[in-house]
Image (cartoon, rainbow, N blue to C red; front, top):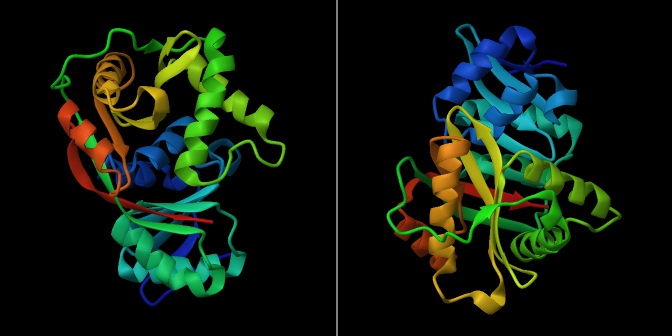
Length: 283
């Protein structure tokens, strides 16, 4: 199906568009880390990347993209291309559980789609994107290490607690416990989970959720409530930065809710700088 706009058209991205898609993603490796990681793993095959890539094309080629999977993520969209994408997306109906990406793009796209897809469960309109490409500015906690499969029985409940507190719903609701554990096990196997465990308590944890174009994106940062207020997030993230830069990618990024002033202060102390802002719409 092709939706025609005034100066271009929207269609599914195919293998013949792969080079153009990669070039578009490379224009901002930090902001586009998630979608670039999907493309790096599976090209543009919907079965391999867990969603469909829609592209907006004009006479010059590929202008903008949207990844349509469990998350809907815009890439380099403009006001005109968002209007065309919205026309296409209204035809298919909402299939995603969230929008996430550059704030101006997400919020404008949501403005166009809310009458058909609303209401949202939550709209987080300012989420600073932060990145670091050098060593941390503070000493790292030597107790933080890469997780192993032996840690899963402790790590998975901590991941569930973090996700539930952050997103507002449990990732294991509706019979998804086995699938969620398998996903955490996969991250551990790939060396992208970092933990400090003491006396059978996950004191600190963080995961790298996406890797592409020399950038990795950290998610799921957690300090056990009993251990908060002692600077563990600062020293723990310093350790994650060091290990991630050595073993995964030279630039480490993340995004954080604007109202989480403690986390933003901790990341700045580690040496993260702001790199624009995301927004998230949750359903």
